[in-house]
Image 1 (cartoon, rainbow, N blue to C red):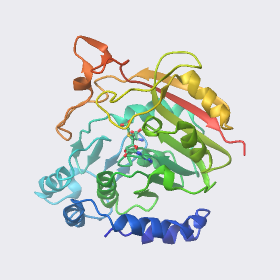
Image 2 (tube, rainbow, N blue to C red; image 1 turned 180 degrees about the horizontal axis):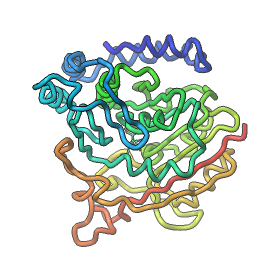
Image 3 (cartoon, protein in one colour; image 1 turned 90 degrees about the horizontal axis):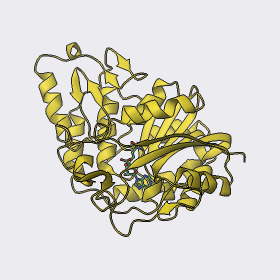
Image 4 (cartoon, rainbow, N blue to C red; image 1 turned 60 degrees about the vertical axis):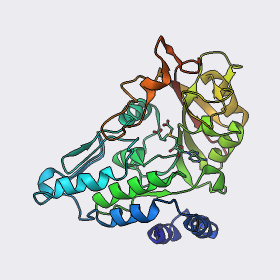
Length: 323
Ligand SMILES: Nc1ncnc2c1ncn2[C@@H]1O[C@H](C[S@+](CC[C@H]([NH3+])C(=O)[O-])CC(=O)[O-])[C@@H](O)[C@H]1O
């Protein structure tokens, strides 16, 4: 069983308290349908120490403690425990001198996002599709008061909890195993991030409206997704897979995405970054040994995916909720 009671107690006293009318029953429903590996994962999680580390660095990286915090032999033991949560996709993390080299250099995405957003100091932040929570720790590094991530992947929740234990059970970040469609209109977050999620949603405008409904008046949306080149009318809908990914729907141009955001009522919409994803940013590693981007590109023409679509390009847009 996962225990979300710390989160319930925390939000009972803050502006997220309305969430308590639905959240406990939603998470109880989730507990009733456990992932097959969950009992094993929970046994491993319990073995991960919760002692406060000597140091925590979150501003320039996610680095917890140093090798000397652990007794001799304990680093190898910790490595074995963490490796049982393979594949590690989002990171990198350095814990007690152990470097978790993840499939993604999620820190590079953060470096592209950070210069363009309002300062996070003191803000309530929601990270929709947060993966294992890597960016939530970086948000805390920028001074966010609270970061809440939602992501339906059970393994990501387990990885997040492992890192949180190693942080000394830090209560400033919480991950809930929910999809965005499960959220009511909370209107309680100062900043909402949706990074790498929109192309997984069958109804992208509804996704944008759901994101808007989580923001306070004047709050900021940070949207990152796969895009194609083109004008305000350009959008790709792959017939089947894209770069071997299933469940993919709409890949607009950045300009079209700006129109969509304005259409659902966002203002001050800015396209702040566009860049092609490189095979240095997404690749197999010792901590993620499955195929990755290099295998998903056409070997004779790296500007195309194996399906013949344009190779992955991502845009970041920032917008304001005026309501
Ligand atoms: N309905 C849904 N609601 C919420 N999350 C979902 C849903 N469906 C899928 N996801 C989650 O959205 C995440 C997309 S990854 C981005 C991670 C991070 N944000 C990153 O920017 O690195 C994609 C990428 O690798 O770019 C996955 O963790 C899914 O489980």
